Length: 70
Image (cartoon, rainbow, N blue to C red):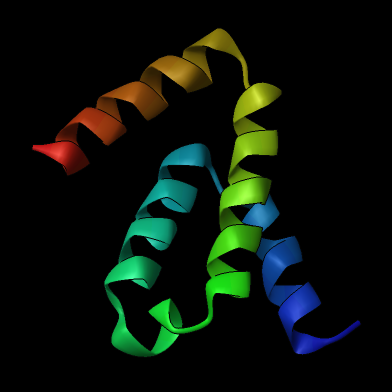
């Protein structure tokens, strides 16, 4: 397994709020933001995890998203 595959596998195990924070910080990082394939991979995994999340997880996620947007 490559280093990128390992990082994405670990990312998949993070709570939704941590995933959101990582995506946001990766986009804000000049070096990481240049690798759009990496950002897209994070967003795709995040969307998959969000789609399978419980209602409780989705509510906590929405609260965290609201905080990040304000």
